Length: 256
Length: 271
Ligand SMILES: Nc1ncnc2c1ncn2[C@@H]1O[C@H](COP(=O)(O)OP(=O)(O)O)[C@@H](O)[C@H]1O
Ligand SMILES: [Mg+2]
Image 1 (tube, chains in turn cyan, blue):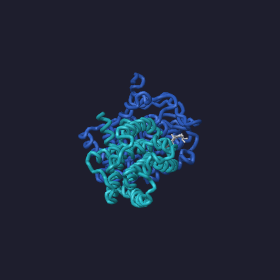
Image 2 (image 1 turned 60 degrees about the horizontal axis):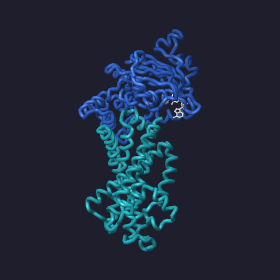
Image 3 (image 1 turned 180 degrees about the horizontal axis):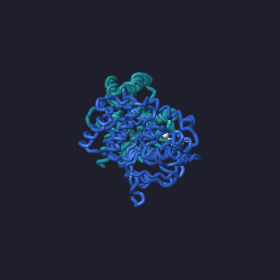
């Protein structure tokens, strides 16, 4: 266990060094959420076409947009891994005696820290837009935990795809193909109960839905988690554990 | 899994074979490398050199046959093998977005060195490789020779018994190449390290290797020491003659388009 933590921490450390050294990505990733909240959210709020209970439409989609930006930034982790494979960095990691699970878990945790930066950005935008946020420390802590878990899920998922497709071109294609449908087949910008039933079925097996459900209760004053936090977090932990299990088996094939 | 027969050998392969679909990239190879030797694996592009190294370093599993490295079976005890080896891939494995020091520290941590060992060995390695002044610069600003020396430093931090180097001087200019050779000879001298080095450079093979094997489409066509191999073909035979004789063609004239392209890409990154 001590060894697992030490090895994972070493991977997280280099990822964070790179992130701090090149913060342009953080800035560019902030653009989309601004558009969604400031433009889309405000316009749709005028229309009042979507019933979001006692929450304003903007408050309703704020957690959805946070989850979206977590998804979009984590899903491109696979590209970085393919890049590392082309360079030979993956080979270097894999000949070391470090456990394969430490290497994969380290990446997931690093993605989690990126996710936290996204969360900070969204809180700032939401604050400026007068969304009534829950600011008690426990709620914020739980939001960050959810964001880390969600980032870990999507980054590991992305790593699995990278291990399967192995080239950047194919990954880009699949990445585009998966992310938008995952976003629309979730409760990010409309509630589950207005979805046609086939879409609701998909949304119910989409991990993004559980992240958003938890965030909606934890981030927003008067927001509620429909499934309950216990269900949301249990689903996320289980999905993450399963994806880790698969990724640990596939990651070594990158060096072949 | 030591046996009396394999004890003397750092590397002992038994009918080691790897297929990729229909292609047999490595075909029933039996190599014996005694501890302390520099062993050259020579072959044209596509001969199977990297595939042999990938199997011996546990990155790729054999289709059949096996090998012992440092006394451990690569299939049954990959973890033990990994602890005993260092590897510099044919690709450029140093991370350009990190400094030289950060690259070294990552390796030291993954190999479980204590903080004290880490500081001491990183400082030593940087000195030894002539990189102390550039330790805190980003690796993407390094020259090809510096990158290769950093990768060597990284591969030896944990004092492996056996070092695997896949075309370590490809793309380097003659001076940088010399420096790498000198460091390798020093390493063998100072630590008694066993080195398996692949190359398609005759001069390199001759300068460095105690023994060399010529690999030709996945098979070993000859093993011997460079001087003996030359002498075997006549008084004034060159290494090129040796290669032509045992591999049926000049080394630079073979290899498929994609193999040559891959080689060029690596060379370009370092150049
Ligand atoms: N992962 C792979 N998938 C399919 N074919 C491969 C793979 N790796 C190597 N090969 C093929 O195996 C042969 C030997 O390749 P390699 O070991 O890289 O040669 P060398 O290092 O001597 O240039 C080549 O024909 C190459 O195309
Ligand atoms: Mg090769």
